[in-house]
Each structure stands twice: as C-alpha cells, then as structure tokens.
Image (cartoon, rainbow over all chains, first blue to last red):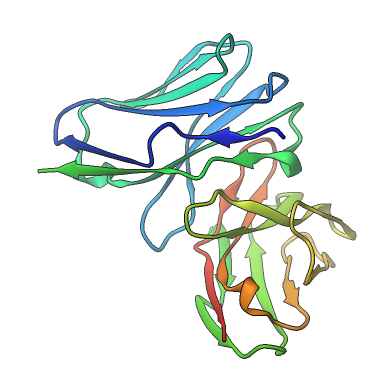
Length: 113
Length: 110
C-alpha cells in the first residue's frame, strides 16, 4: 500500500550546524506535502508546506525540497538551535484531500549545545 | 483566539468504561478531525468532519463515535474502552489544506 516513511528515526546535530531530515513517499499522485514539528507533550505544529508544482520552498531558517522523480522530501534547518529539538513529521496527500493525509512516523532531532 | 483546545489532558479508564474527549476550535474552520498517535507510528485518522452535521470515518474508526452539531465542537466518544485504545489523541482543524492541532489527550485504558 501507499506509505510515507522516514530514512532515519533519530538525528543528532551540533548547535549552529545545519540539519537535514528526510522523508520518502510512495504515492506518485501525492501533490501536497507538509512538515510538522512536535515538541514533547504538545501537538504537531505546522512548519512549512510545498505543492508538487514546486521543487523548493523557503521559510524562516527552513527549506523544503521536493524530488518527485525519486519521491523524496527533505527539510533543511539552518543554524540549528536547541529550540529545534523535537520530532519532525512529514505528511502527504493527494488532490487536497485532507482526510487522506498520511503521516510518517517521525524523526527525533536532538541539538547538542 | 485560543486555536484548538482539548480536554482532558490526561485520562485513565478501566476496560469497558465510556468517555468523551472534547475538542473545540475558535477559528471558524469547517474541517475538523481526530487522530491517534502511537509510539513509533505516524498519526492515524479516526474520524473527520467537513462541516456541521457531516462526519465520516477515517483509517481507524472502530470503537469511536463522533458528532458535529456546531462548527466549533467535535467530541470523540469511546463507547467501551479497550486497552488497544491506549494512545495520545489529537484533534485538528483546518480551513484550507493546513491542519492545526490541539495539545492532545493522553489516554490509558487498564
């Protein structure tokens, strides 16, 4: 079946370094992707999204890259800070069907001071 | 503007008990949904609603009921709690594509 998954369950980086979190998806018809951040004891928080007609989108210190050829999504965090420590989820959906949004299991990012 | 609120934050039930998880949003969003989050797994959709009076099943609806009598509220009912329903439950709302999540309810069923 279709699935959304992550390459690594954990990622540890030094404060100030850049972080890259990866996500693979299998539904070639997916056309909308979101990255969420979830801090301990809290609900997922929207970070950035991208549609399939784009291959890159930038926010504040974050960049999402989409490679539709290999069905791969990545989240880049520049100058990672201790406050970035959290679990990061990717999610995807097809045709804007929010009830069919599928979430990856998450990658735990730890920032070392 | 409180966003999406959920109560209670924590709950312990015995097998067979029933309860209602409350969810409310003050953003006038039409779309609301309930997810459960289990260790090592992504969020899984339980039920969703595209507007007042309209609900539908998600990926894992068994053992749960919902209703949407108002735009603001979307309660989730556990009819007869089972240990397999031990999880963290998140409510979300959306006006367009982006969903905004509540803080979650951690439920333990003994």
